[in-house]
Length: 346
Ligand SMILES: C[S@@+](CC[C@H](N)C(=O)[O-])C[C@H]1O[C@@H](n2cnc3c(N)ncnc32)[C@H](O)[C@@H]1O
Image 1: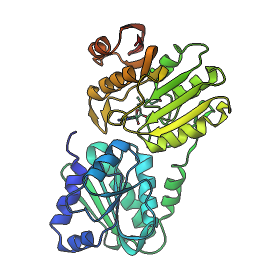
Image 2 (image 1 turned 135 degrees about the vertical axis):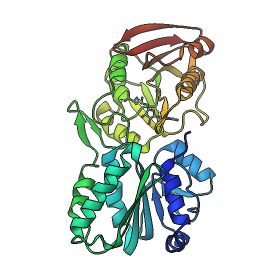
Image 3 (image 1 turned 45 degrees about the vertical axis):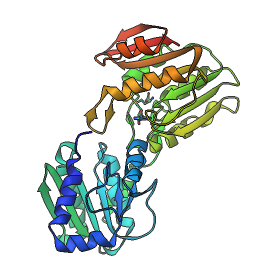
Image 4 (image 1 turned 30 degrees about the vertical axis):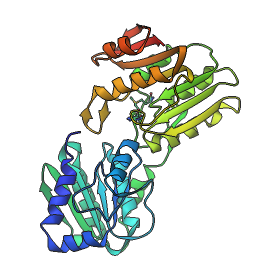
């Protein structure tokens, strides 16, 4: 992983300011840190992306799926989704004691600068231009904003919370929210894979990296009664949406939801008749096709002998050697619009 510049900026700022150092010692919460920032060991971290949550736990931090209670300091790290970050800032405000310190840190390459400005404008309006000692710092190609909580929440915060709700946004059918892959539209690769799903099938099926359930719902639509669909997904927010999206699948289709890091957790072996996947090849901003290769290797291990993998990938991704190694035979069954669909047999 590339170093997280926003975390470095945060630690650096707190290291060099004695008032901030003593705040740091009192503890508080961090929302969406990807790793433990230096000096913040006494904080509790909210993280719903399983690989990051596992990493944080391993570094000795307490980790939660959702911050609760009131704290002296709350730090929000920018995610790739502006709407999620703004909602997290508004939610963090609610979890601060009066006089508590709200901190936002974001890499400028991820919109940190404009987010910092937007938050400052919202606070400034609410605090009659006084900004109550808020300051905005620019360092390590990142923006850090600090503001003490006083008075009512700025009116903009309510709208920011509103746009983070789980709601039907796609094809009049699928509920999504910010903070998950392709939350504004179905992914083009997954749409291509959907067109190559079998018309009817039964047995045990796994969807690796299931997201908010686009493929799983289409599988459930075509499955014979008695079929089991297991969804494996690292982002809890997405898995919660998938559960809602599969609510209409009917009692005759059994769905199970696994919040896991597919690349690291022991998964059932030789258990599935069909595995589908649109594997990730990023963590955060860093591209890493090694994650996708690991997904394909895992899929092979999970299939029963004779079972089938259906996978889609951006056509530039180098997955062929992995398919050669892990499967008895495989073929490209579609190559269209920058994506390729593989069918592979164990
Ligand atoms: C390309 S998206 C496909 C999502 C969904 N299947 C769809 O078609 O819209 C890949 C998914 O894998 C998830 N993911 C990323 N890393 C993961 C990991 N290590 N273990 C499990 N899931 C992971 C992402 O959160 C994302 O939802």
